[in-house]
Amino acid sequence: MGNAVSFQALMVWLHLLGAVIWVGGLGFLVLVVGPALKRATAVREYLRLGLNLEGRFRVVMWPAVGVVLFTGLFNVINILYATSLSRGGMRSTFARLLALKIGLVFVMVILQAIDQFVVRPKRIDGLKTLSPEIAALPTPLRKWQRLAQGLGMAILALAAVVVLLGVTLTR
Image (cartoon, rainbow, N blue to C red):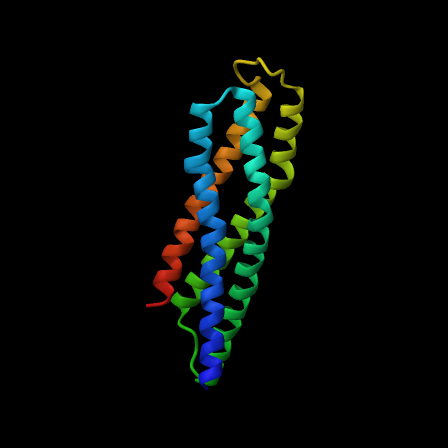
């Protein structure tokens, strides 16, 4: 029994660690790094540095997302197994909140994928066409920048709801 509890605790800890790396890192990029770079550097340099930092974060972020999904699946299976052993049914409120949490996490992953695999390449292409002395981003590139910022903020807002649901489910 002790090993099962230790393994379950490890899976919960890894789930939380993955979420902290993913959401915490994204929050730091969106809320701290982006605004700081925008104030401190020229337009082209701001975009170049921001994309470079995003690329470096991506190397850590996607494995963290994988850990969140894998450990989340393990935790759900564990809940279902424990429920079936106790011959009790899962409360409908609990089941609905759990389903909502899972759905929101999948929406977060989809938004993150759109940002990384659709929006980011457009921003990189836009950077390649910018001259070093440019004073303001051209309109199309400015729209891609705003979309990237909006996606990051949306993921952070959804993460806040997911954390709230997680806390509610553990009560």
